[in-house]
Image 1: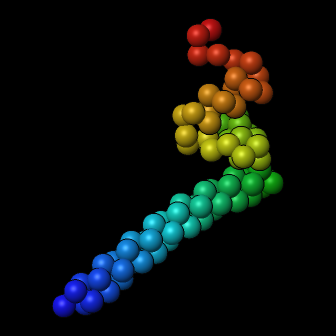
Image 2: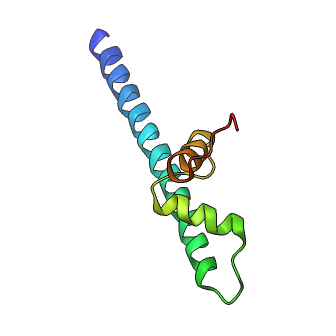
Length: 85
């Protein structure tokens, strides 16, 4: 009985780990898809918007434009803009 319970707990732990890894892979895939979409937009026939240019530049520098901390870091590090201004 104890062995069966232990095996079930081990399987549960493995499955939880697998789910976590898959969620992380999905998040990374979604970020990559968005990045590729922005890159395609940059090279399409239409003129990119300022938001698309900033978002593209941030992603090229390893920052995520959907994360507030990354946006603040981008403007502070690369352009010297502070929230206090």
